[in-house]
Length: 167
Image (spheres, rainbow, N blue to C red):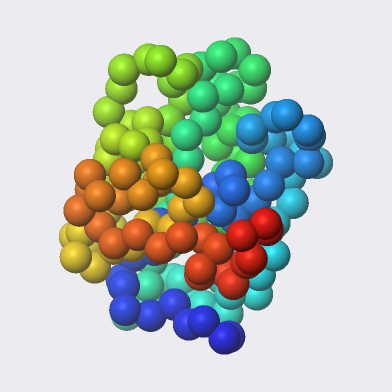
């Protein structure tokens, strides 16, 4: 592993644009299993970590899924796709509370949609790990703002996984 996961007890990842990309042009997130692929380096880095052992770091996923609120994908399918993402990326079956999604349509006021901190706070609460020991990895400004609002560190996905600007 060239870039070890170290220094934080809890690693929370955004999904789309951070761990996976959608293979359907113009569609921001997948609606079915065959509509996404892992981004470069994700599996190599995350499967090199033991996520569930004593004293090992913990893993979470926090993802805006406004297509649920728009009626384009059922919430159960969005959650299933995020579970499959964790399995494919990190080789783990995450507990349900470690996978947080915002199902609200764009424009709906809620506490969970990034840049709000709700999803990150729920994952930290589940694990009992505070902001000082948590990092959020994402690919855009709403991810960075959510990390700031939750008082956690932020790492750009491209920096963690070693992508060029165009990846």
